[in-house]
Image 1: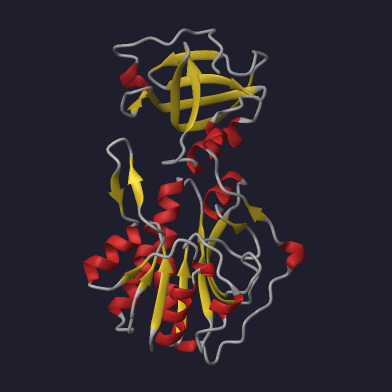
Image 2 (image 1 turned 45 degrees about the vertical axis):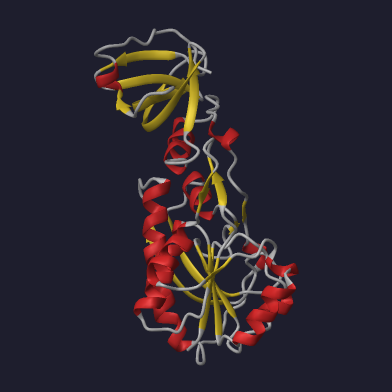
Amino acid sequence: MKVVYMGTPDFAVPALQKLYDEGYEIPFVVTQPDTSRDRGRKVKFSAVKEKALELGIKVLQPQKVKNDKEFIDILKHTKPDLIVVAAYGQILSKEILDIPQKGCINIHGSLLPRFRGAAPIQRAIMAGDKETGITIMYMEEGLDTGDMLSKRSTPIANKTGRQLHDELARMGAELLADTIPKLDIIKGEKQNDEESTYASMISKNEGCIDFSKSPGEIERIIRAFDPWPGAYTYYENKMMKLWKAEDLAVETDEVNGTVLGAGPDGLDIAAGGKVLRVTQIQMSGKKRIEVKEYLKGNSIEIGRVLG
């Protein structure tokens, strides 16, 4: 089977590797254009491009895929049996969706129709969902609205955004390999639009902690935003990132954001009328460190209001 693969970040790498390992013919991979890296302006390749080059697969990088006549002509001439998409980052036109004989399928990081959109992994953690997973679905012009072909779930438990991301990336690759051979016999299941929710893109500003939220909410934000954008507040006008925390289930009348204690067990902060204990922090320009280690050479003033 001839498969064109479209993806960009590291989430999409395991599925490309799996297609290669399974022996599918991959005439080329499509990924987002290269970007500049920081101040040095060095060119940065996407994770998928790096993997494709490592595997010896041709890479195409159209600026705007749905308006690129040259790319669409190449795709038509190639006549792929199937297009597989994973976190590509651009909308595909109906003209592109109609090219492959077996259609276009997408690897989506949620149990659809819950959390359609750009950030399903983080939003599932933030919402306090007990489980999430992968959905393989047919693509159509709507945003993650196509018929579902297969699903696989996993508990969220206390996983961070990075841990869940990596697990779902591997799971998506395995589910893809199981699903493709069955495409001719699987009957797609329509999504119930009334049950759909939207997972909007994460912005850096969302990492700024609002201590009027409950400790449980804040703890989920901290996990969801690990490693990016990171949950943070300010102490003495310097950014303090919060990397690990727990809900002590203790009430307090102190102003939200007030430092209630700082010791070997962690940093206790008033939040939503209760107490949040933070056990790992990162001060501006420094590395992540356990609070008990930080306090060996530094102090955090009790009574100070963070933010």
